[in-house]
Length: 300
Image 1 (tube, rainbow, N blue to C red):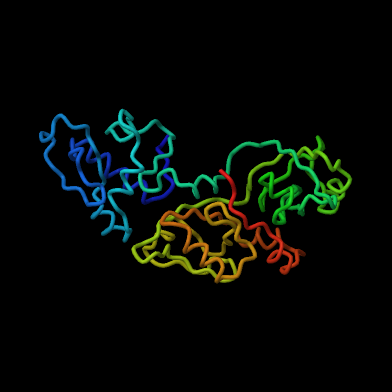
Image 2 (cartoon, rainbow, N blue to C red):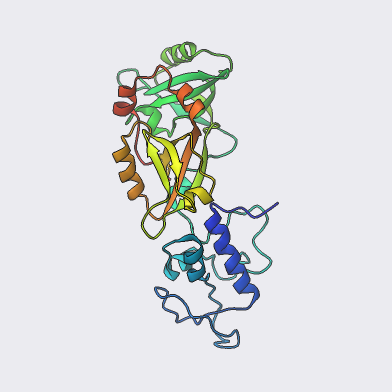
């Protein structure tokens, strides 16, 4: 099983780290991490613990990234870890020397498997959830802000497998809504699969603060050549559902641009193919999406 990385930039950074580890490159423990490190002989400072850095100049030249030694040092694994040795990390482990323990990456994660949630209704008898039939399955079409559905972490595109022990396969959208309406207001037990039609892509802003994507009405229409978006396989004819785990469906382009601008240097986008997205929101009022969709930042 190959080593996994959140982004191509993380893979490149880790390869440089491994090359330096194999060569025995080390810097003194007193290195000021806000400066680019100077490489010294492996025989110098023999008593100091090894501190490994990627060649930041190489990354900047290759990818146009704005990186600092301090940023990389924060993401290195603790002393004694084998992840940066020439042998490499355990197979299948996610390695992220540039992305690090990024909160947006974790908020955006689409987990495998299924989970059980307990949902209730508000004082008006509402869950804040609208469901849609797609290919014989039932999916979350809308989660209203500050609703019980939002509070339990349901998201646009989640698949509902069961409601109160009843399998949802083959239900119509209307039947799913009727079952919700008749369910107990105190406790509705649902079995959920995280967003099976969506995927996440982690990108890095360049020195000008751009990721290299042009978006119109939420849809990716073009990619900048040699940008992080292009390098990491972002595709046109896809809609952006989330930025760092925050739902952006229904936002105006200016609002989405503001979310991207404030998202930090490492940005994880959740995307969905246009054909599926347009089917998912079919017959859903555009005004309702813009005014009611939950755009809160999920808890970790």
